[in-house]
Image (cartoon, rainbow, N blue to C red; front, side, top):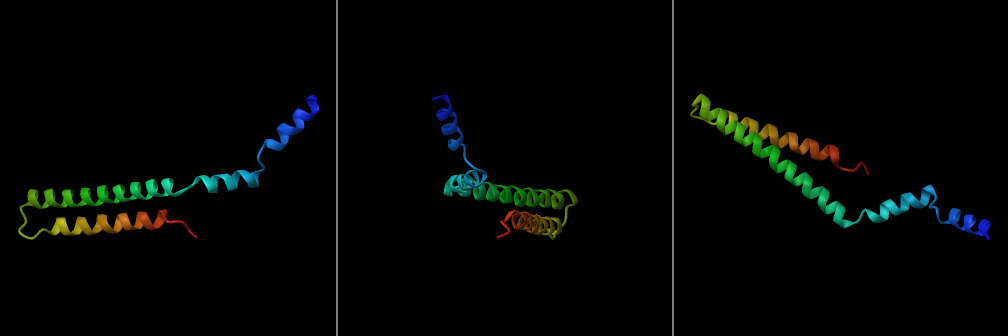
Length: 91
């Protein structure tokens, strides 16, 4: 009887192919939504920091034209888009 239980236990263990299929099955829309929501908040924070730094730099140097605001805004925008591109799946 013990031998039968052991054989049964072995058959219940997932093979490497089955465990991979389970991972793909578990990765549903909820985790995708959370992942892209996190990326969106990261982009928002990066661009916000760039805009704030540019604003305060222009205020500190008392410039008439917002040079730092525009330049740091675009740098942070393109930086966040580059990070988004790097995170996209390669498929």
